[in-house]
Length: 281
Image (cartoon, rainbow, N blue to C red; front, side):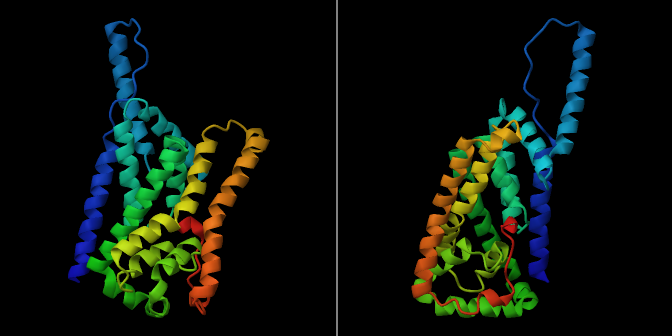
């Protein structure tokens, strides 16, 4: 009971912080100055305050592409003069999702590409994915071990068996699970402390193992921010770029797959009912 109360306290505190951060927006970028009468300026000030309140109400986790596009436009607007605030808000929201195993971080990866470009967005997504997953690991270690074992006894036992069988090549086994998610990533994050996986090994496996997936999402966001119509989406340059991205992203997975067939013990892993759609990464 004490562990559950501690977890609830952490969730409430983090939620309150994120609410405050998203509710009190800084003033929006100023338009070029023009001569106005005092009453007009006052009216504009009231309109600006109203716009800020409206913008604050639009800050929520996107659940579809339309909401994602609206969010990207809003944050791009604020980013012109408040880059630090947008970066802090984005990082806080991303870590909140990852730490508490909330599905939908793929939307935030796409948003990273739209806001920060391909390479900065990729670096940010990889770091936040890894730090957030590690926070989930630590929260599970501190508060959730007994509850996870009680809720998923068979799945935990199956993973425990496979980890012990592959203890001599544990890092490559963890990479395999990230490249080919036979178990949901959120479940791996929460069960890793129970499986006695060292946090440093866990950290590196998440950073490297999810890099191809993050790259595809971030590059998609970067491209979408420059596409004005469906015709642009199917241009030869875009198609060739997508093919190159697919090849680069699939190469590490192919190498890990080849290594796994020779050195890893994976029998029965796919039959444990832990398959998961990649959108819940």
